[in-house]
Amino acid sequence: MIRRISICSLLIVTLAALAGAQGTSKGQTDAEIEKEILKLENERDEARQKGDMKALDRILADDYFYIGVRGNVRTKANRIDDYEAGIIKVYSIKKDNFIFKIYGDTVLMSGRETSTTEYHGKPNVKPRQFTNVYIKLDGRWRLAFHQATPILEPW
Amino acid sequence: MVVMQLRWKWSENTVRRILVLPLLTIALVGLARAQGTVANQASAGTEAEVLEVERQKDQALRNGDIPVLERIYSDDLAFVNGRGQVITKAQHLQEIKAGNVKYLNSDRSDFHVHVYGNTAVLVGRENSTVEYHGKTITSPRQFMTVYVKVDGHWKYVAHQVTPVAEK
Image (tube, rainbow over all chains, first blue to last red):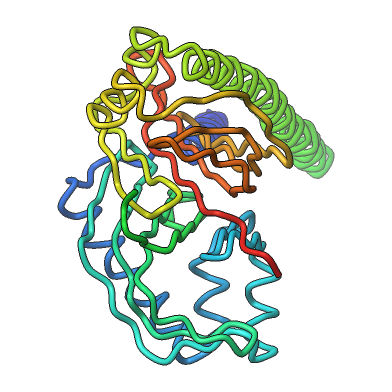
């Protein structure tokens, strides 16, 4: 009898865990989420500067999609290869005008960047507007999309 | 006799274990597969829903149909145009109403839809012809559009465009 109860309990706990893992995570306030995303963004920026591929691998989603200031499209593997090959260099980070929009397990983080970087030997110091899409995957926030557009004078 | 009974009891327990464990495994594998199938079907269904809203939005842009755009655009829409300017829903609709922006045709390629629950992100390349403040834009742009399902409706919450530079 005890064994049957134990097996049933085990089955219920396992099923509940399985169902729970596929649901959305709750319980965080918007301020807590913003703080967590900002921390992750700082970790990503530090990793970009140091060339810390292990940290980038942890932060970027596996289907990460990058659209650069030249409209170039790169995957996670492309970006990591570019860092490892020294094609991307990040000399300093400067970002401001952050706006966070939270929709459940999705956070849109936008802002302005004037970091000094180099891509294929071409320096980039011009201001650009960026949007980052962070998605909570398996309980962890991951950067799934990044797009940057050079800021020009309005027509 | 006692020895036989003990052996029988042990044997009965073993049989129970042998039966229960595979049953548990089959149940869990079945559940996981069922959830996977449902998730795949849901993802395909979601993709079709979002693409339909995107089609309606594009048609409304070409026709200057403000009520349709009002319905699809989220009130907190952030629209980043090809010059890196951030435009609100009200500003964007005002530009269309005033005739400052005209979407003359729709030409898109390399379209990818990524679905994460109630969020769908569309990325692709655009060669559509747009007239903006009297200037005709035909040069290729890379775009990202984010839709979020709010109260059962897919809402256009973010859009960004980056001109594709020559190599």
